[in-house]
Image (tube, rainbow, N blue to C red; front, side, top):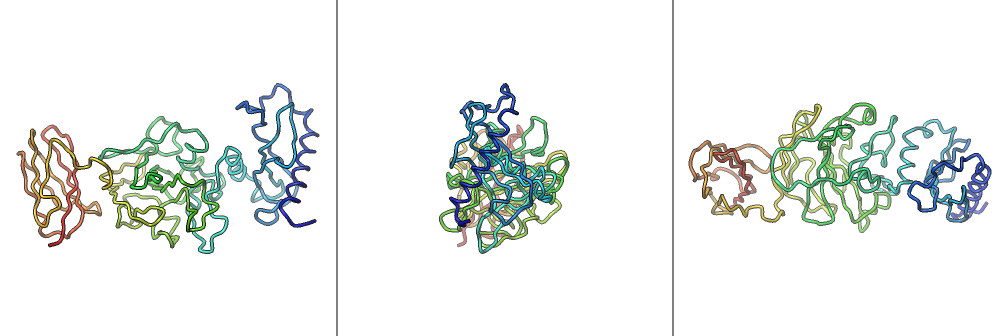
Length: 386
């Protein structure tokens, strides 16, 4: 037969139509096949005897729609459907079926269909990029946007210590956060993935996962590296715009080389176009029933240093800085460098202090101040070279 898309669509969909008409009387009329009441059957799965062919050919598990022909079940049009191969043992699994069914709900693929560089934006960390058996989860953003199973993803706008619970936990506890970047179309997604049954038993390791989400795109399939980029990207050791890095080394955790996430860490924080994001996530704990981390700053956030109770000057500085509290005494001052390392700690009981940065290199420093009522203020200081 002619090797073109139209011939394939016509022949496949006519076959599907005949199958639907054959089984219509076997479907109970009181069965709810249109849950969202759009006059379309919510989904039909055709299980065909036979083995797979080549990727994206007819004999390959896929989700498609009957757009060349019309078929009905009790007055409801069959449109979206899944096509599965019953004799393809490695592919006829719960994992593949879950992947294809999520397509029926609107979720896109998170792998590249064509990419000479063989870059993996997500790899085995997500059901929509690769399959494990039993199936692994999809990330919180995919559950929110395409599954509609999450009402909202809370945004971190204040600096402090946060706790996350496993994404596969049934408890009504925090499982995910997002952090804004200087690009309004991109944000970072944080979630805790724990290697355990039933749905994350096959992932590489447990830890804090950090994703870059670009809402300008839908999925990763059409990526070309120029004007079509990834919607979802997982930060991993050694990864950048042009290098895969080690996809298995994605979870951040205390007892690994990935203990902090900054502009200069490995992996480092960057946008889809490679622009760095000035952020500091550190003090990530060892994974257990939960995981904790400190979120310290994002330079582009508005009103970062506009605190009415504490002033810091000169800022930027070439030497020392003075910190002055207007109404309360300060009990403790901690200074962190860009890598999240504590370099200075001063315990005082007064409303003014001088911090000496003479012996430290130029760059950005985070100042954490605890007052006499144990309230914590976070400010940023910049040291410039002479």
